[in-house]
Image (tube, rainbow over all chains, first blue to last red; front, side, top):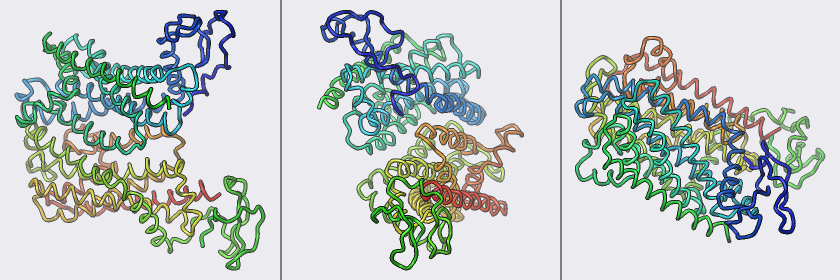
Length: 305
Length: 311
């Protein structure tokens, strides 16, 4: 996996002196000159913070252009399989036994939005653990990017933006499948796309901020096994929270996935109240903001040695 | 002495007669492919270098590889131990949550069993498959392409067949430990109604063998990490649709027939029938299915390792 092939542009260099570049390239490489905005470094002709983030993002898009086939398969068929097995297969058993505990909702409609939210988490975790670590340690994309005008914060935000796009893509596909299966009750589910993406971002931002600091990758195993899997199983995804023992429920309320699941489920069933929505969104936004702030710091500490 | 070229010898570009009385090819490091058509060691009957070496020696060389992994994992025992936790979380979540939602389902012979008892052996089969697949795909790929472990191993008397057997053996050892832990927890949770369950651990190891061998063989064809999306693409539907979570009767007839021929389904039926204490004669051919699948995978894996690294 490398940054350059596929969409490699011939290297273009910043023109000397203070002349603004004559023609901005249609699609610039990492070193491509750009329209002057100068807000990042204060130098005339220097690209702005947002431009640099987009350039870092572009690197990942170039990579993705080469590997999208295999990832499409897993991000399209994976949720389809899950929905089929859990919603229909298991659902037929649950519905036969009675859905009073679910508030009378068929199991498919109960579980589908929860799978949407937990899929966002899974995508976020897989895109922000090993790929981030590998960019420092294995294929060293970050090290290469750091030798360009990109600053660590740009590298972080570019990668995070790419991860967010991946989460949004997977969520959009899943929503379409949900709708096709008739697992949706309310038109509010349109907002499920930003809701699921926000859920993913709330995981991706802090996890990437942490992943970049590591020296060995073993910690990922613990986070996946003792963090992600219990979250997936006990955050009111496959059964309502009321079935958890009372002392465990506050723990579930504190986890980000529960907020994501409640948000998506409320939108899909049309039962979401404004107050609940504000709490869930507020929690997820706060977590994302803290993560983004921390990421800028940890990336700087790691990449400016 | 296997046909592998010893890397620690000084690189010599010619065929030279050296110790133990037969000729050996000493290719320069990193340029093995150039010698693809070089003559094999005469002392071993002129066999071409890429042929798998004698299987008779396999256990000893494989044991060495397993010992190597055990030593390497000493520093990571917590990773090893944490693998026990994953199926337990599933078991717990089903015990608390789904079990209550589903109530009772029809077991193998049509009798109603609590959902927890129904799912637990299925999860044991799934964890045997997943553990074996993980070890024999991701880990083998890393050792093959990045760690270059097998290049190092082939520089010793250990040959490709022994590598394949050792890797699969290691995956099975690991899987057996997890299976024992899982079965014990099942027993503690009161999910093991029959003494037939003593066969659960060896059968879980058999399931592991089938998938580890095929997984390792498949891994030798992989080019990059992206190819692992295809591993997930195979293992996930097996996990979800092999009647792990619900009986076969849920499916339409056509789907059910297809599912009946998939490998994990055999493992799920084997374990479920044994744990619930209703074994039938069909379990024998199901076990044979898994055994043959494993042997075929083992043979292919050994050939591929030899082809990739010894030519």
